[in-house]
Image 1 (cartoon, rainbow, N blue to C red):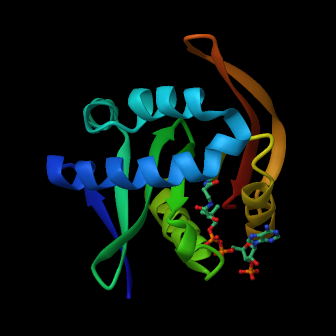
Image 2: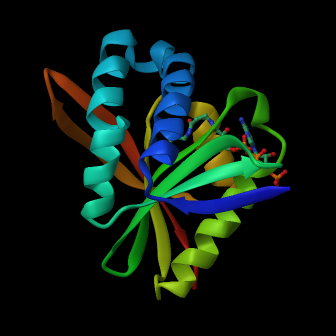
Length: 164
Ligand SMILES: CC(C)(COP(=O)(O)OP(=O)(O)OC[C@H]1O[C@@H](n2cnc3c(N)ncnc32)[C@H](O)[C@@H]1OP(=O)(O)O)[C@@H](O)C(=O)NCCC(=O)NCCS
């Protein structure tokens, strides 16, 4: 059984930090290189950095299957849109429909918060995820390059799914 649970406690965030290390090294090293992965994990997915994000309005959700963690999400409301900042599943849990289930959960949360769309950014070379998002109904709306310090940038597409 798949469950989505909002988390704030240190031990849950520690579990997300551990999952993020596994997923990001495996998934992003071929796309952005090891150095940027290490930098971004520390900046965005350490327990301490996630605590600060939560204090500033982010929601972190642990995804569990029969009580075992299999992935996580993070989002925040930005005006009339829900901005989906993170959606990650462990490799052996992808391609089984759980991403779509997670998106349905996000769409319901967004509607509950009065949002008219869900927006996200995705690395321009993260093709499998872009294809999954398109299949789920997201459309490309533009491109954005964000300077994240230390000489690194995030080179992304902006994608959006209307909930209207
Ligand atoms: C992106 C991600 C969350 C999607 O979750 P998933 O469980 O693999 O996706 P699902 O199995 O639910 O697939 C959702 C839909 O997309 C389709 N899809 C998935 N991958 C696809 C691909 N490479 N090409 C075309 N369609 C694809 C599926 O067929 C499904 O469509 P359907 O329900 O109509 O059959 C997951 O693959 C993941 O964690 N990827 C690695 C991390 C990552 O890149 N995260 C996003 C960062 S922005």
